[in-house]
Length: 224
Image 1: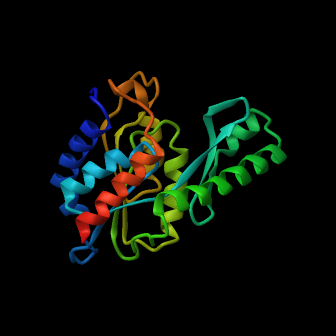
Image 2: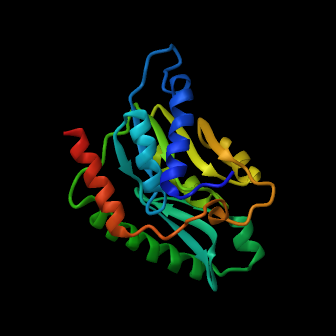
């Protein structure tokens, strides 16, 4: 399956979720739960926008930063998220013999970047309350899943009732790992030959900070 762009992927993902969310946003005794959609900036936010629209749910973000391997920054050795949550791929770190001092330095840099981006994206607004809610956590796709794993760990500390990870594309092995962390996982396509998230998009231009801010401000206006 190929997506035209993130908007198209979000529309299809939203359609799938609208068909199944009724099974997920329930307590163990069948009572309905409020649904909140969280996008991972930056690329996950345009996808999450369409998902929130399809579910008629409020939209917010969860800021997560990848910890790139020194010299191979696109390869994630872990990730950190708002609220001091983190995920480290210790097997990768050990196999590449990355010094702990380098890991600590990169972790510190990315935690500082999270604070900056929180200020940029939220503009002083508070985040939505996710306690007791069914959270639909959205990104534009998974590769190693490091950022999504950190996001799930960060959310667990905020006491949601359910966490549903929803992505357009992911390799099968990453999905298996994610199912061990989230309550439910929705993925539209699992390519047998995975060449990165962008390989499933015709247009995969970088999402700008300005676009994220615009989407968030638009979602707030829709709630008023």
